[in-house]
Image 1 (cartoon, rainbow, N blue to C red):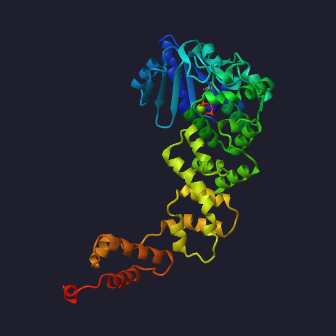
Image 2: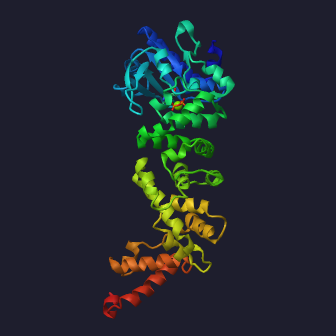
Image 3: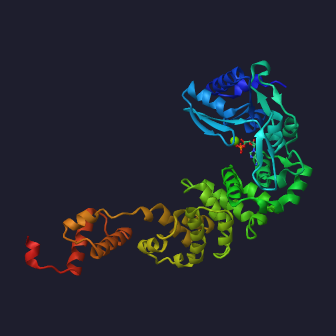
Length: 423
Ligand code: ATP
Ligand code: MG
């Protein structure tokens, strides 16, 4: 099958010129270049995807170096992996040396040696991701599909390429479900059976790699579909026994997305994912996935605040009281609790903090207070705090109000010698 016409229509002109140029330079070195993976899949499906992966039968790093010398591209090379990134103004191209992989043991990173295109395709996760399109002049546009990926695209199936695929690399379990849900495909029968058989192999995968797959899931348009399906297949509890998914998660993820300004959507998804955990249960999850210090703080804060929500359930609370109850929590943890709590007083108070209170600042700063004769140190701290509270509660509005209040506090707190004030 030849896809030359489709490539010409699908790729932006500039990008097309780039890959043709790269292929031309490779040809002079006696090497062949192919488009591979996601772009081939999406081109056949008619979905836009301009994240191009190129496979070179030959040394991809040397080729990329040569291309970079003759163009504006910035080069990032990984000699150890035989891969290189070429960064242009509007595009990034990934080049990889065609390789053969051997897994010494499940979950370990594979031993890699240079290989042919076919070797490179068999090491891939699913048949629909194991297709290539030649960019060489003599067979430009020819589809290389040794594992019937196109047929699986038509049957809408996610299929692994050999029975040990999931045990070699159990992150493929998470990837399979991600593609299944994104594309509205199904797991092919044997793939589904092997996925269930090999789910315990997730234990062989490092925390960083599992977390990375979750991050990729959270970049999907509707991650809740993936999370629900992982629960249905019994995969979620293998990552953490307390993880579950029900209608609750789906509704809250959807709500998180609708927020006009979601404070970092992926972090918010993480906080909602563990919302049913107890404060004690979360530690195992954080350690297993090697979650960053900042996100760990947000997730712990989410659960700590959840237990303290009853304090916010009082209509008599002043804005300043709400502020001081909430200021110690990460904003994303507050957001997660706002999403999790149904419309109510608590919800309104959380929203008030997020949209208004946390941005309230006094008009006067330390320098101006000094000019009013208030000395730096604990006294000034107290004055600033009183001003801030008054501003939160709407008791002062203008700079003049603040000055007046500050001066009255000064008189209260530090009675001064009249002679000195006259100076
Ligand atoms: P996406 O649209 O999600 O980016 P993609 O196909 O481009 O899809 P990437 O994660 O960018 O996916 O990976 C590029 C290619 O590398 C995949 O198409 C697949 O062939 C291969 N690949 C990625 N991860 C694995 C894995 N764990 N095992 C085998 N092959 C993989
Ligand atoms: Mg990609």
